[in-house]
Length: 375
Image (cartoon, rainbow, N blue to C red; front, side, top):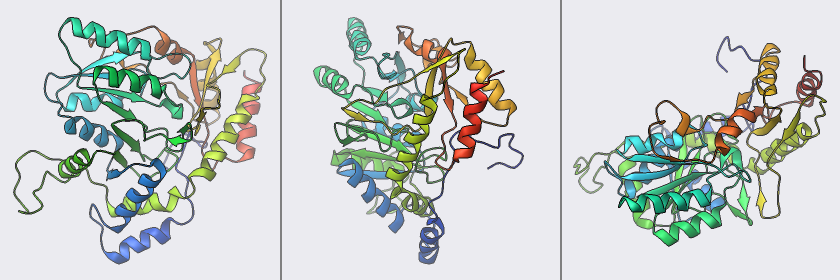
C-alpha cells in the first residue's frame, strides 16, 4: 500500500496466494521481461478455459481492451456508441479515444445494469435521425450479471454488436456459463483491486478469429510480422508484460476460493441489524452466481450513506460510494442519455464496504460493531 495512506482497513486490497515469487522467478529466469512470453500465453490459455472462448489477448488494462474492441469493430470519428451509464468511467472513455459519440442508457433496478427496454427505446429513437450505433457496451456492475439474454436479443434484432464489460465480474456465471462469454467481444480487468490481479492488466476475449488477429496486431504497434518494422496503420503499446502475467497465473487458481471468501463476507454484512437504517442488495438467484467482487449495499434512509462513510473513515476504514452515473458527470452530461432515474437513485443510496479476501474475522466484527452503534 502507499506509504502514509490514511486507511488501516482497505476496501478491496490485492491478496497474494503465496505463489507469486515462484511464478515471478520463472519469468525472471527466462529473462523474458517484455510484453508477450510463456506466462502471457499460459494466462491467456487459462482465461479461454474459464470462459469457453476461442481467443484471448492479454493486455495492459481493461480500458485498453475496450479501446481495441471498438477499433476492431471499425469505430471511427462521429460514430455513435451506446454505453451503460452506471459504471466506472473507463467503460466510456475509450469511446472518446476512438472519436466516437457516447449515448448513455440508464439501469434497471433488478440487476443495476443496462435496462433492455431503454436500450431498445434509444435505438428506435436514434433511427428517427438516421443514426445507426456501431456498438453497445454493457457492464456487470460490481459483479452483478446483466440481463444478457434480453440484451443479446436486441443486439441481434438491430444488428449492433455487443461489447461485454466484465471488468468487475471474473468468476460470475449465468446459467453456469462464465461472464466473458456473452459479447461479440468481452473484456476483463486485473487491476489491483480485482479478485485476481496482474498489478494492472486486462484481457480481450472473442470467438471471432479476425477480431482476435486485429486486436493482437493493434496491441503490438500494428507491426507487420513478416516485414518487422513496416507499419500501415497506427497501433498501440497495449500488450501485457510477462511479469504481470506471472502474477496473474499465481492467483487465478485461487479464484473459486477467494470468491467463496468474498461471498461469506457479504453474507455477514447482510445480517447487520441497526434500528436506524437498513441494507438492500442484489439477491442471488438460480440462474446466476455472483462473485461479490465488492460488498455493495443500498442504504435506507439514504442520508445515512454519508454518515456511514464518515464514521468508518474516522476509524481508519475505507468505504466507497457507488459510481456516479456517467450521464451525470461533467465530462459527459451534454451527451444524449435515456434515463429513468434508477442510476441516480443507486448513486444516492449505495455504499461498498470492505471485503478484501484477506479481511480477518476480527476486522469484520469491528466494522459490524461500528455500524451497529453508529454515532
